[in-house]
Length: 102
Image (cartoon, rainbow, N blue to C red; front, side, top):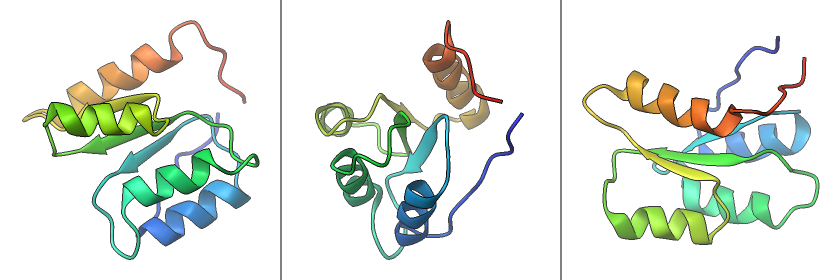
């Protein structure tokens, strides 16, 4: 099983995504240097990156979810008072029926 990775900024996330191998990218909307929207747009336009991207944020507006899905995110998870529960449930839905690479 592969270990999760993390990035401190949007630029770090972009670089990691384009040089690493991921089954899923959980991308925060609010990051320093480059926000998640820009990272999403750049990754979706780059053929080297094929993993599904899930946006993860405190923003709960419907228009933000629509924006994410229109820009190519597989899902949009708004942090709830229990972020672990909402995140786990969202990721569980994504991998349901899919085989994860070792």
